[in-house]
Image (cartoon, rainbow, N blue to C red; front, side, top):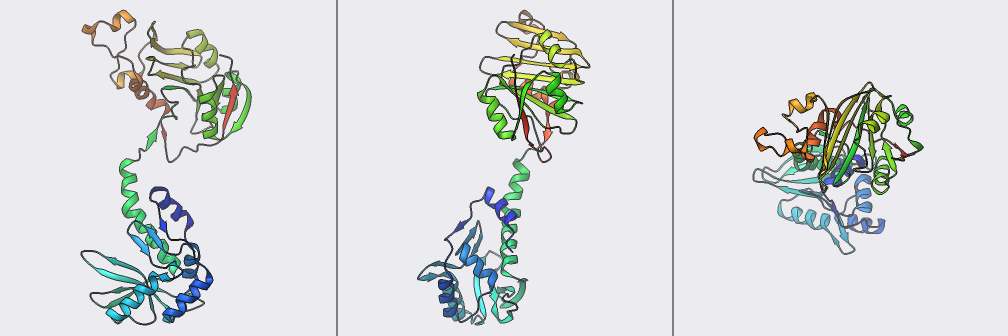
Length: 346
């Protein structure tokens, strides 16, 4: 059978092109014109797709009521190279190094199926290719995937990412060492409702009084409220996080230039930094993440204006850089499982 999973994987990145399925009557009409019996797997292809393929992989078939590329190509090569009458040409491939036809070998029909062969036009040699048409179809799509898609994915796809952003306002907490139910209870969220990840994220984006708590994953959960709604007042943070083992919080609002982060560990505020146009809050010693990334932040607005000190100016990029160690997840492993949406009254 056709490998539907592979087909969809290829179609996700490259659009296949097909003329459209045809009727049993048309299939009978053109197979009689060729003087052969067509295998069931190829007839299924004709009824679903007609003719076509993806990228460099093209399969001949029946395109219209009065036109069939398998008839045209097969008859052409019967005349030009004396192609055996039992062969039906389903593909023609030419490169600088070779030129060959892919053919159904209808002389070896067994249980309404026949093998697929490759006919080398230059050397006039024949080699077995696949046991059925379905196998040939799958192999062609796999070749396209490996040659056209896989190299691009390996070059372009990042292996890790941070939680999904909320436009120009990003705001989330990363809770380590707890479970979702405990987080909801400890942070006093109300009216939990389960929904899928994308739907939950959209809910948070449009509702100021909602928060999303993600599924348990590798001893980590994300708590995502409306962007920019997380308060960076010391008493609020401790009230929210004091009953949980470790909580990191991040907020960046690149339009208003308000940015902040904190870490609470075993009920103690280890670090809090927040800066907007009105001032700077700076509590605690620099985190290892700050030292690692050579981020040396000012303690006051006056200090931030002192160019001689060469201090780091906080911005969206710095927040995301600091968040990598606590919040980054591996794309291929993260489940994007159903989330819980709760009410908040911040």
